[in-house]
Length: 171
Image 1 (cartoon, one colour):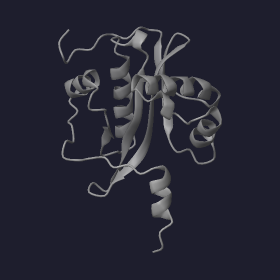
Image 2 (tube, one colour; image 1 turned 60 degrees about the vertical axis):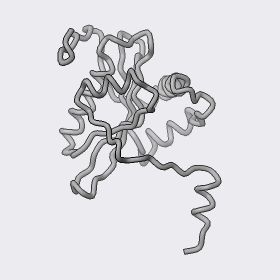
Image 3 (cartoon, one colour; image 1 turned 120 degrees about the vertical axis):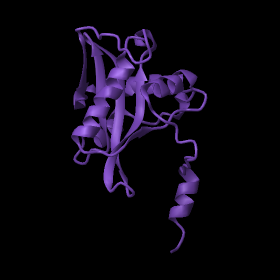
Image 4 (spheres, helix red, strand yellow; image 1 turned 60 degrees about the horizontal axis):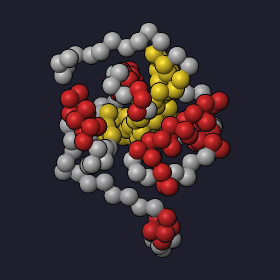
């Protein structure tokens, strides 16, 4: 199969927005992703926090679940960000995961294509995500789709005590 060709997806495959009753499935997929990324001990999410933040009065993100028959085979969790330079919002993909037994079937590509359509339908100017630098299979996959690394940018993160300390500083 050439780099640009796509494998036909099985007729029993579908991608649908997650529903509140599926937070248990979402949490399972998050935990499997964290284990794959060698960070299983860092997951603090619970079904309660996911219900509140994904399906509460002010949802903070959206989730798509990929299904094969009645089995959840993967998911994508995303939210909107904003580009001041474009003057438009974008989509930031926080998590993309396909269970190892279902990889190589085109499901990851299908999730990304679904998100690309959402981005265009919503008038977004960007669709972006981060990838761990050691995850060569994902990096190769993204590059084959036409994604470009933003090597000149470095992500910074502040959590826990450092976040509290900065927030407590007087103006």
